[in-house]
Image (tube, rainbow, N blue to C red; front, side, top):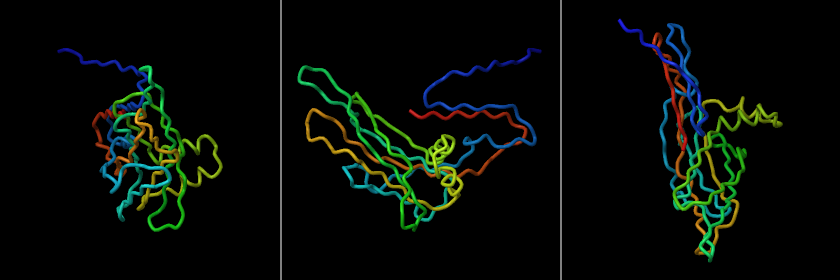
Length: 199
């Protein structure tokens, strides 16, 4: 005889996406939360300056790609007096249709860290294109429109030099690519809650 109720509130947590709704018979899929995902590792991983590491879906067609980069021992510079300084590493990510002759720059950015434990970054191809299109960047809307289900290649290039100082930890790796298929499962009549967190 008890009534079950629930109150929902939203809180800002970095890297956490939440979506929920009651179930209806004609509901649409929750965007991004009914995807089929398969993570795979590139054949090489350690990134050295201007030596690109490439990943191919090998003919598998996908709707999106998530690129993972790690600093396995963190990014940090130790000072002689026991203090530490941040380390910066510049990286470029590019993509192209499998078999295409030219690459498209997705994003060039700087990784910054001041800690000795493992650090991780994830870049989602479609999200970057969407953000560039919303910002009004010239040509970004066309790139987004052209990014359909297909077979792709991705390459990651370290642009800044690797430090030779034993007191500096700055190794970064092209760790994985998650291939995403948006199959769009809707589960009619079922209440849905989706949570996705990126550390």
